[in-house]
Length: 453
Ligand SMILES: *[C@@H]1O[C@H](CO)[C@@H](O)[C@H](O)[C@H]1NC(C)=O
Ligand SMILES: *[C@@H]1O[C@H](CO)[C@@H](O)[C@H](O)[C@H]1NC(C)=O
Ligand SMILES: [Zn+2]
Image 1: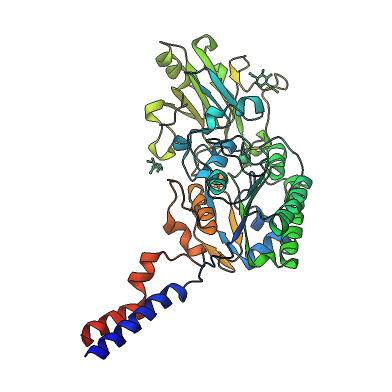
Image 2 (image 1 turned 30 degrees about the vertical axis):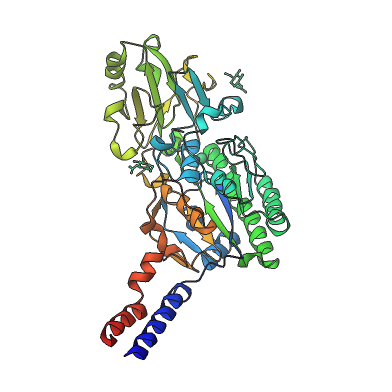
């Protein structure tokens, strides 16, 4: 009896130990995995498959073969860059991180945020609500570098990554190649754990020429060539055994030319500019700040506008996860797909587009309702944390953040992602309690143990 009990206990102990070591690849504590995240702005979900020539895009094809990809990624609302970059770095919806677009205005402090104005985006106040992954990783003692990624160069609660370069307009794909070369060096010989690299070449060409243009296809090949070189170098230096690479993007792109059927509607044809303090942004989404006492009149007039949905703040759809944001204005005008809001020709319009030619025409644009297929974007990854040659179901943009935390073995900040949507992409996705409750060997032994004693 005594011996049987000890024997059973010994087997049980062994199996508990085994159950942590065996079913999932163990995380080697001495050799933490590293992560490179590449954010390719404006990469529509179907760009790679849209390319007919199967031999082209060797970089993306290598990723598909050696790693994972989601069928697509559902963007947030608004499907605009700064809001989405912040979602990518925090896993939060716009109303929770408060970077609610490329342009917004704090009516209380009378401060404005503008995409291309680094003086305005440098205002520390915009950035203190939430902690992005580069801050958490740095705080936890990881060595972090960023290239052109949002305003990662602004300290959050006094913390900056070891090397931080914030967003500034940088055209072409060559800066991507140069930054990826630096990334290899930083990981190989400078002890970096996380490097985040941003490039906007594909978004620029999409805006200028449209998502199905030959220019876009060339941009895709240029970016692919840099990616392929990078993946080859990782392989040549054996870094591929410890380095995970994630390719993410912020939103898709839809055609904007009148030739493709897009209709431009001028917002100031439906507004008395004397009734408003600002019209903020245009194209797919415009926020209108009426002067005191004018909201009803402005709303009524905007309801006459063609091709848009107009909302009072409280009536903005809940599932946009937008309306509770701190800088949301009283009226929101959302263009329906196929329509484009032309900004007002007034100093109250932020930003102000050139007055000629008017309306200003985009080859492509985004920011539309986040359920429109053209707004969908991509997620691909490869490395020791990810399965091989696996395509999974669509995920949401808010889901991506938790994957960085998982790969880097960090506790994530509170976020809006769902683990159930991403776990199938990972090689080591079982949590402690799951292993304990579902390991069949362990279960059998527990039953046997009961039988023995
Ligand atoms: C950025 O905004 C500041 C403050 O409003 C302004 O003085 C400056 O001229 C702007 N810079 C650019 C490049 O527009
Ligand atoms: C998103 O996450 C934040 C932080 O945990 C939370 O406060 C908020 O309620 C979440 N939003 C939704 C819709 O679950
Ligand atoms: Zn973007």
